Length: 460
Image 1 (cartoon, helix red, strand yellow):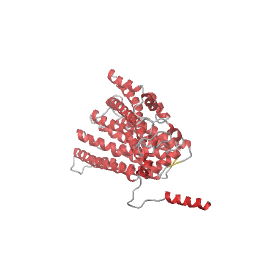
Image 2 (cartoon, one colour):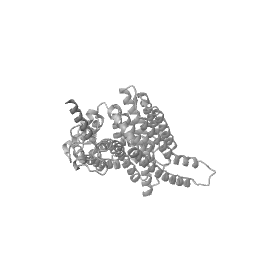
Image 3 (cartoon, rainbow, N blue to C red):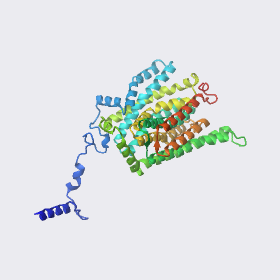
Image 4 (tube, rainbow, N blue to C red):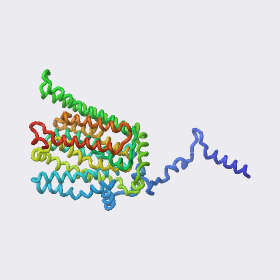
């Protein structure tokens, strides 16, 4: 009897392992049964086809009350607190039309109103990115965070009369705010909760290497101009040197765009498995992952609607804010360098900063560094070339002829961050040092004088 049961098990095992020879056909139901089985995520929601399980909301269409509740709660407590500022959005818009003579009040209200509007774009982009594969989703999330910056750059170059001084300062200020202030805050917040945090060399080395190359591309046109403009042994007139620098800037912009496309291909296609494994490891280290997974999520349509609302508000506020920059520079004597390096980047990057700091607090430092360096890379390799090319198309001489102070600050900032990322470890001391470097740059930018014939002098 025992031998018979043994033979039956052997036959069952052989039957289960049997594979038909080439040319034979399986029954139609044998290959499609698994494909027809429904797939459920951690919350018991049936997963829609081509939607990542973590992004499945379990709902369809648009539900106004749930939509408002989810958007208000946002991604973390800091983002939810920021949403308290939403009443400033209609106030800022109304003040622009009702009292156009109150320039300072319009600038302040629109500056504050930009914070919740940009936060909505960032949160909606994050919800949309959850529905995609992880490596691609991170790139998409960073891109949505950079849309606010792209809108501000385009509004600046179109409405500010081609005021390239502020735009150039804003480009470098955005990169410095991400690398020094935001990454420093991530190291600081994570270090307060743990003695030391570790991150993957794949993330840090790729990011710091790209930033060094991007910084070289951004600075070399300025080095060319400043190196030749002071020489007296050349037959080139000062105007000709500036024209040559403009041509170099446009060529560099095209090259940087190619570099950005290669970077996206690297992270989302050829080496997506490497980054996905790194992010999966971060998900396992997330101290409140169970709460994040259990949170209600936006549907696909609700994510698109939130992005549209956020972009509409950001676009309006950006126009009203940029229109007041000449007043702040000429009447309030705030330098172009301070407006571009400090004021504009702080407000446009608020959503990315809050997200990254929250990730560092939850021990997801790989995510945080990817968001920080990814945003800086997009500013250098995508947003900057776009504004140069758009200026080329509309007849504005938008070049990369940065001031020597701005160029040196960028290169030193990249070197500081590169040295801190080299050992793949971080602590609160490194975070404090990064923030202190940013504060030093901010003080210098406040007292930095405006170019000759522009504005009302330096910050003092």
